[in-house]
Structures are given as C-alpha cells and as structure tokens.
Length: 290
Image 1 (cartoon, rainbow, N blue to C red):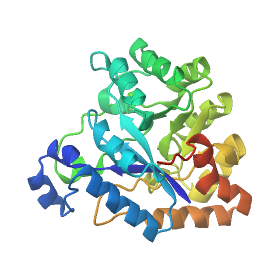
Image 2: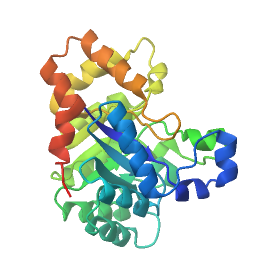
Image 3: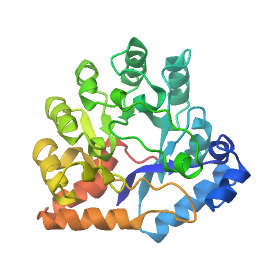
Image 4: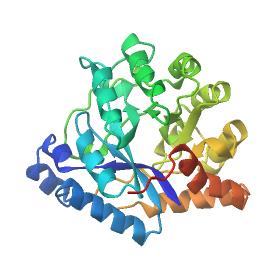
C-alpha cells in the first residue's frame, strides 16, 4: 500500500503559525528537525505497513523540509511542494525546486491564493512541469478548509470560486503529458471533476481525507463516489491517500478502512484495489533508491 497524500508539518510550517505557542494550543508534538520528522514518518508507515508516501510541503517556501526528508529516505518518500503563482517569478522558483532532484510535484491551491487557473502565470508553471518529464501538478479544487488554521482561530480568506475543476480543462488539454492530480475527488465538485477527467486522460483523482464534502449531496455515499469514479476514470487513475499530517495522531488508518470497505461494498476486484492502493502510485512515481 502507498499513500498519495500526506502533509509534512515541519518546524518552519509551525513557526509561520505561531511556533511553540501554536503547538501548545493544538496539543500536537513538536516536529523537530526535518530528518527527525522524516524518521518518525518512516516508523509510522512501517507500523501500518505502508510502503511509500507522498509528502507535501504545506506552505510556500517550505520545499527544503520535504526535500531533506526525501533525500534521507528516497525509497519511501515522494516530494510535493506548495507554490503560489501570484508571487514574483514563481515559475523560476518552481524550476529551481524541481531541478534540485528531490521533489517531483507542484501543488496549486487557487482558492487559497486567489487566482484563476486560466491565468498566464499558471500556464508558466505548467510549462515548467511539462519541460521536466515525471513532474506532476496537484490542484486543489472544491471546498478548502485548513484544519490547523481553524483550530488556532486564524483567518482563512479563501475564495472557493477559484476552485472549480472545469477551469482545468483547457490547461489539461494544453499539457497532455503532465499528470494532474485533483485531491478528494474534487472536494464537493465531483460532477465537474468527473467531466474534466472524462475529457482529459492526464487527470487523476486522489481519494484522500474523510471526504466530508459528501454531506453536500443528499444520499451520496463513499461507495457511490468510488463506483462513479471507476466508471469514468477507470481503476488506473485513482490514487489512494489519507491526508495524514501531524503527530501524535500519525497515519490516519480509519480513512484507509473506510475506503477499503467502500470498494468491497461495490465489488471491486482485488486487481482494481491493488491499482488504487499501490500500483498507480508506483507507476506515476517510480521508486528511487539511494
């Protein structure tokens, strides 16, 4: 089993939220150095028999933390980093980060940073990715809620209008060799995400989080979500993820259990489940060794 969606909540990440005072309020463990946190994640993955995981640098400018973790455990981690295209020369920063060799996916959060996916500055980021085979672009769509900010009482001035998966259609067509990952089945915009994925074979879904957005669709179940996603994307473009992030909670095993049960409920074969829980991740992000 592999996990396509884990957040690497590093010391610099918490420093931006208030440091030790924020951790004390949350009741979470201090992450320590990037190497120490990477080692803790490896032990946690081993405990749950998870082979490999994607680690996301969860704020712009923290790519170095995840790069250090990947360099320390290259056989266990794949590195993603958040980028804000509204910042000057963001595409230059993206190129430099990718050329460092440790990270292979750019994460865009248009609702968080308030930009349209059709903008030229976003296209420049895709051009950077397209010029580096093996690079993916992760695009958060739909409902966006950052739990740690909510718990700390910090404002989250997001704009969901920028999170429509339909806005990915043109850019996905323009860069057909760039894998585009939409997390959480589109986080409430499942219909729109399915449309884009149906039209663009380079669009993938990750299945991560509690998928609490299901409450917006009366009668919808996680099993039904999987059934429809499989009908449109097939089993080759679904990537299992949990959205795990902090300690002492660690890896969120109940998310795996819910998804395992949902796939069993719809009669998904062992082969389909193997592709979703492990093989698609390995194909998209081939294992590297020290």
